[in-house]
Length: 608
Image (cartoon, rainbow, N blue to C red):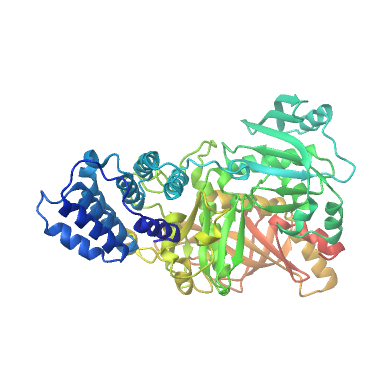
């Protein structure tokens, strides 16, 4: 069992029965009841079962049978047989309800049995009855809160419910006048503001816009900005001058929205709006993602037609534990209506592949969660419905098997197949590992909608629901795995690469002009191939590039094709620019891809 469950159950074991019904009982039964309580405190639970089961049916009072049910709850602390034990406890306790409905300990034990089965609605109902019988009992209150958390009945923090971004004003250029804000919104060619409500009392604005034929609601207000936070957050590619300017600022425009449509479009629009609303903006503090975006990235995203990739909507943080293990977890998925994701127990040697693994799963979830029209297709708040049944999205409707994500291939070609498990269940697999990310690390955060990633080694494990920890699978994944992205992600990445193709063109010009061999351009190109089965297919493969024109891209193939494309490594290939799907520049020891193309501008003029 996980730590929280252990603490609660230990408290139960120390609890004395206080609310035995007042009806007459034989002295023998009362003496035996007291003896059972004594055995329980001493851990001699087998004796309780042996004695109670040796009695005749008439001698087995409801109170003694309740003690027997308590034994099976105690045994459920062994996670390998937890379900079996909890079912046995309910089988014993349920018939006693009429006799013990006013007994606090009976109601508490029923709650614990249902909680062990992750049936949180009936568990909560019994805990609430127990609390009525023993008001202010801390153990009971804690279990009610746990059930609320697992059912989604908790109050989410603002950054979990909304996508919140703060556009940082340059010092002395703060402006929240009604007229200027509306004028800036109206200046956007592809966005139409259809409603604008300014509240002088609250100094805030609620407005509605139409973008890509969809309506979006936003709220904004001006607020103070603590510039010291820049040094506490994930941030990339801020120059010393950037940091100096931000440090002098103390005001930001807060723009937030509840994501109810396609998240890729919503977050892209949010950045476009902030870019227009805050002239000369220094940075964006993406509160829900716990990161800072620099002004060059903001400008590039706001002006982009390609938009954002799924992995741009969240951030992955890594926390190293005292034993050297690494806890990877996301920030930013919750506001999209998706569970946050985690990997526990990674090591430094495998952290890169674990980072790719969590990104691949998150990207698939974002793609799968929404239909083409932007409406919600399926929920990935994995856990249980109020009736105790699995939430849709956690299980397939047809066979009630966990949803799986095929995210790529191991170095040996075997598939990488993953699933996600709610953290309260998933961390049971790590209790003995002593890694970062267990319950003691979650007192103030990472304790709502978050799930752990696990893998299936083979189809048999999937059918038997045998989970493998990512760290235990790291050696199998190997040094050269192939992680895959969905069709939508691939389309966005290709559009982004072509939209910003002037950057690798410029890098090639710099290379030819300086004869610097350390400047290198590689590109991923979609190559038509024929499979071994005689079917047409497309493979996205890397080339070293030496020529890019307005219509074509040319270079030397770097990797083997799985199918027959009429080209092998070392051969030259020339393709239409429309087949370019990704690129990367090596410049001054820094790797620059299309997402951070602006880095070439920075590195040409100054160092980071």
